[in-house]
Length: 513
Ligand code: SF4
Image 1 (cartoon, rainbow, N blue to C red):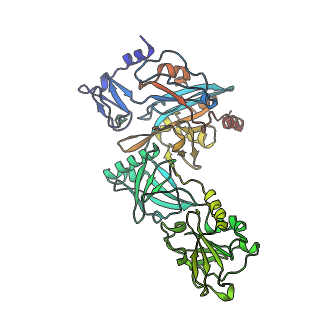
Image 2 (cartoon, helix red, strand yellow):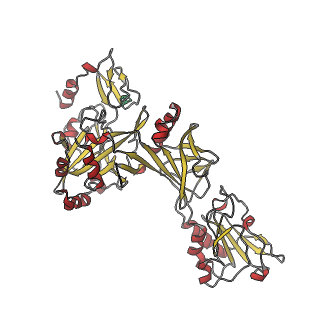
């Protein structure tokens, strides 16, 4: 009998068995599952009277960073044949690992591996995150809704618009109040939206008093049915600063229309330094400093994130005493270079639109060329400071201290995370760096995310780790774990280097010994 079959045979469901069903205890829902069926989250099932994690345990192969091929270690439904497919550096992720619930248990896998003379331990578990959400960055100038406006999915409130960043609108979604503090429908809709966003699927979000936005991590946003192409090169003032020299001698005046800071080259410091002449232009808006105007319009979907479609609407009367004259040329352009128009003043000092001259094409093209592609970025934010830590060490606060002290390196599905300073382990990770489909959910509702803690073996023992549970990668490949699922090898994303030896060596030099 193979090791794997033996494990199946020795798993005794007896005391958990209720009328032919067996109980899954991987989360507080405690589903009773009939043979051949899965539980409420589909992550666990009853396979011949045993609780099995239905997805394979994912093992990343870092050897393929050098271009080697990788095939599954064990295909689903088959037993491992004893052959190591790739002997390079492998990283046992928590994807498919199972959880520590009800928390007192050691993590499903505690893996040892020596890399370049450093004896490392990686503690691997899927975490149930009731305290979690996503921060979404949408690269667009367009006004998608007022700050603090409610963001909805499937009609339910799941978050809000938060403070915008440079060239991007920001959403804060999820969090414990939407997951657990509202109605059941709100919790379900929140969990559903978070899960899809984290697994890089498109989600339609409706903003109260604003737009309908389709967000998909790593893809351009679709705002009110229109695909966004570019994020702006900078604010109107910065655009003037960057391109003033390109326009010198080609046109008498340039206005860069922007909802935040509209720039006017003849008045702007950049224009002054280059010897630009006054033009007698008048901008309708609040003058901040020379050549920089706030609030030329209301925010919207028009030029430069304003609500205007006719740029002349932000201009007042031209002043002949301050340089306005018939024939004076004017370029108006948006911060992405997508909208542009050329005018000349007539005898009554009114701007008249003229065909766009060839000589200005290059500078407008340069604005467009300097715009980066507009993308949606989704960062998963979760608090791992709770009981999950007990699966790592018998004294949970030691893990928090070790993470904060950079002695322990935290990853989500092998992807590096940012850990917030201060108390607890509040982490953020770019979901596009996490292998696809890594996130799950339980109907409490909460998200399930893979999490791994890597540290030196001696540090692990010192912080009260479960030394007796440490296993080698080969042993895990061969025998799997409590949840009996197959192991699956895949190439590690090139952007996720592992292990972080420099950090862990520094930690050792920092008094970790
Ligand atoms: S919801 Fe999923 S993890 Fe929770 S008890 Fe049911 S099957 Fe197990």
